[in-house]
Image 1 (cartoon, rainbow over the protein chains, first blue to last red):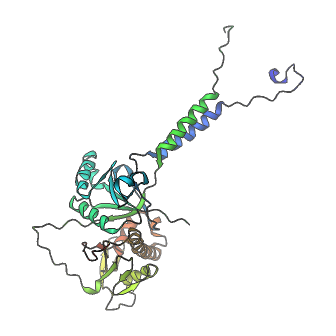
Image 2: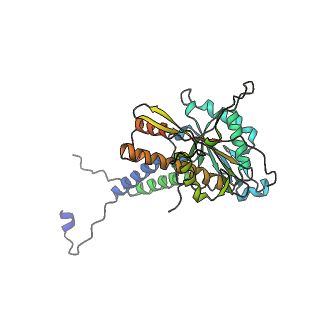
Image 3: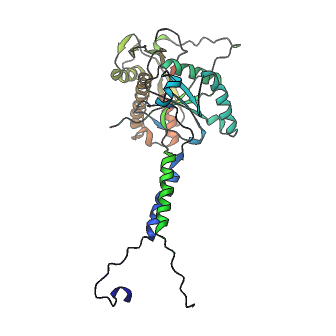
Length: 156
Length: 193
C-alpha cells in the first residue's frame, strides 16, 4: 500500500489491471467456438431462403447434407448466367450428379446414422419449382427420403 | 528468496491475441441454426411391382394445386393462402359430419382410448413454374393447420400445448391427428415458363 500512498505528494491514479481482460475475451472466444460451426463450403449461388412460421429445428446437424439451389452469385454470373443452378459441395452440378453426392455422403456416416441422414434443400425463394421437383425425384430414386426445406422465421 | 525478482511478464497483449482469435472465429464460422420444414418423401414405386390401387374415397382427398402464377386451388375452388388453413382445418375435423368431407374411423389409441381419426389426405400438386416461395407458403399453411388441430386436441386431453407434452403423449396426439400430406407425382402441365 505504501506504493500508492507514496512519498509523492501528488496522488497517482493506479494503473488498471488489464490481466483479466484477456480472460474475458477468451471466454467470449470459447462461447463462439462452441456455438458456431465452421463454414464448410463457399456459397456460389445466391440463396434467400423463404419464410415460414411452422419451422422446426434440425436435430443432428452433422448428419445433414446441403443442396443449394439459386442463381449464381454476381461475380460468377458472367460465366454461368443467371439461371438457377444446383450447387453441391463447392461446384455447380446437374441433377444427375446428386446420385454420386448422396452416395458419398452416405459413405461418410456410420451404418446406424445413415437412416437419420437428412438432405436439406436450401433454395432461393424465387426459384421455380421445376428444378426442385427434379431434385426431389432424384432424391427419391436414391432413396434419400428424409428432406428438409430450409426456411427461416419471419421477421416480426 | 533470491534477491533478484523475476519481472512480471507483460500480459496486456494476450488480450489482443485473444481478440485476433475471436475475430478469426467470427469470420469463418456460422451461427448454427438450421431450421426448416421437415418432410418425408414417398419411396419410388418399384417397376416390377404392380401398382396396388389405393382405393381412397373421393371424399377423403383434398387436392391443393398451385399453378404457375402462384394461384391456389383447394378442392374445386380458387382460394387465397390466408384462407387455406381454415379450409384444411374444416376438412380434417369435419365437425358437422358432412358426407362430402372425409369420414372418420374410430381407432383405439394406446394410452388414450378410442378417438375418431380422420381419414383425410391432403394432396399437394404444383406446376413446374410455381415459385418456391409460394410452395413453401402453402406447405407452411398445411403444417400450421395440422399443428393447430394437434394443439386443440392436446389442450382438450391434457390441458397443455402439444409442444410442451412429453414424447409418449406427443405420439398419442400424432396418432390421433396424423399429418397426411402427399406430394403427388409431378405432372408436366404448363410447359411454358
